Length: 350
Image (cartoon, rainbow, N blue to C red):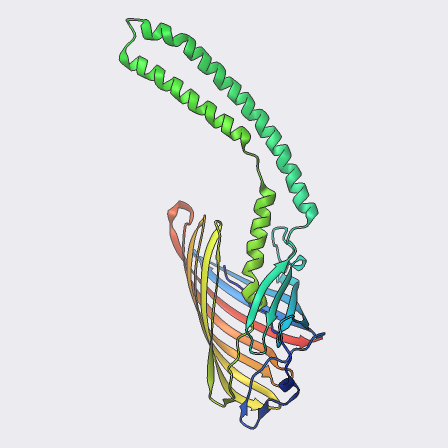
């Protein structure tokens, strides 16, 4: 339920052609221009301690951003694709999902304000969904035939019991307990007939479930793809800091989640057109699904570099620690996990 970070871009104003830094102060502003293509590489190393075991993995993903003119005055339109995902075991297993099939889009202001986030495409190919639908139809036909056979057997059993009912009920030697058991058996048979009848009408629809899960995965990537922090209005001097708060979440029948994060950027130095920042962050995550729930707290610190000439962050490095409380484990148990994360992002103009 953790989400990896991702990249930057934005719009064009007359001031963008001017230098926005001087001496020991600077003014941060995104300076992306229509026609530019940027590539951001995100790498991470995670060490997890959970349920008495330890697991380590290194991940990397690359996002390509295209900058276009927006219909909104003073804004730019960004489009992004996840070009590569891999880990130290090779290509990431995404259970048949192909994230490169998605195109993420949003409008961005020079301040870093992001609006109108959306995506097109599907993580599953039409061929894959068609194959699943065909399998579902075959399964439905087989299940329907089996249910019909079981329904007929139950009807035969019920008919036999009905034929014996009057004889048993009128027999003076029949005890009240036997009569009660006979009526109960007939009632249960009727209930089973209704169940088999209802089950015949239920056809598996894994394709729809796959589409829905794919949409949730895509929406879950929004904070990572459009991660750009909003920038302060005025000039910053050495020692000044600014805070960025982000809120995101999902509200669906399959999963509900809410994430609140706060980042504090402190300007440490300005040199050769680059602004160097130290970064502190805190994140709280709450998530519930059909399988259980997770409450996580994440804290970390790191460094960031903003290129004042290009008008974007070109490098961010973080070290974080996550503590999670997990419920809904097998047997109704709860557990905890601790994760140490090293993240690095590098942004390059193509």
